[in-house]
Amino acid sequence: MPRISASCSASSMASRRRPSSSADKAFRTFGRFRVRITAGGRRSMRRISSLMAGKSGGRAAHRQESGRCMALGAPLQLHAFEEDGAMDLGLKGKCAVITGGAKGGIGYATARLLAAEGANIALVDINGDGIAAGVAELTKEFGTEALAVPCDITSPEAVSEMVATVTGDLAPPDILVNSAAVLDNKSFLDSEPADWDRMLGVCLFGPMNVIHALLPGMMERGYGRVVCLASDAARVGQGRLSYYAAAKGGVVALVKSVAQEVGTHGITLNVVSPGATDTDMRKAREVQIKESMGDDRYAEYTRKVLRRYPAGRIGEPTDIAGMITYLVSEPASWVTGQVVSVNGGFVMP
Image 1: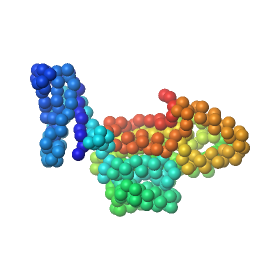
Image 2: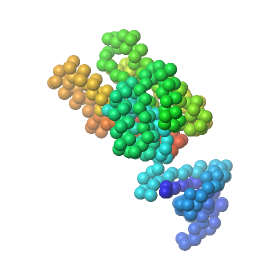
Image 3: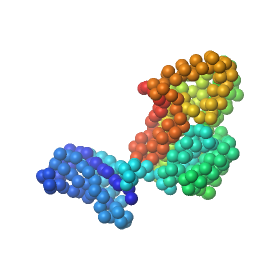
Image 4: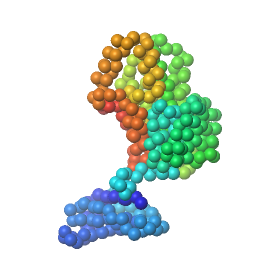
């Protein structure tokens, strides 16, 4: 049974408080919740019998009283907690589509956290074997419903088929995490248009295709959470990542713009911008760098990289997955159009 805490902060409520002593406290009922109001202006929440018994009608009553509070200019803030004090993220039973979901990356690390919260997972990746292994692990470890859907997200037609498969075999998607990406290790002048097309196709047009396919259903249902991965390379630039950074900069612009269009439909869109993260994709790029530099130069290079991170280390996929999990949760319902850096201090705005 969740524990709910709430506050209703407005000076206009003061005139409605009853005088109280330390032993005499006023209570006001907000639907299923009873708020204790003290003379000092602090509020606390008591669960009442209808919450514990799960009686119907409480939600409507809460909405009515919440509307009263809003009319007075006093935003009602509700936060749910489990009995052990952990925050209830409201993810149980939600259906999450995660692109770039093969094992070894941020997408799969996110899938694990969401599955642990009770969400059902659709892993989407061009690597069918990688997501099949992930689904088997998620099902065994968390008992969640999970689905592997091989898909080339650069193809609008393939994405439409993927959405139909997820909707029919699992559930209509509530959550989208766009984490599919590719990396190169080339200077801009050494690159060719084919490299740009590949990068933009996966890192920009891919997220665009999936968002475009999922938004109509989310709007119809009045609910959606979308998180796209970008990169701090898009914010500050980085040599040998020029067209990767350009693609990720496009993702930021896309998310900020679409967030303004669909916010009134109960849909949020945000960006998580990681620093260097120890994924399989990065490891493959590091092998290329080491081969080109040699052992000694590469060792010095890695020391220089770490010195740029006040945290003293590069990130782990779970570092990024934790922020994504929060942004797709119920407590983050008022966070939209934002770019959140998770980077060990590499960039400090």
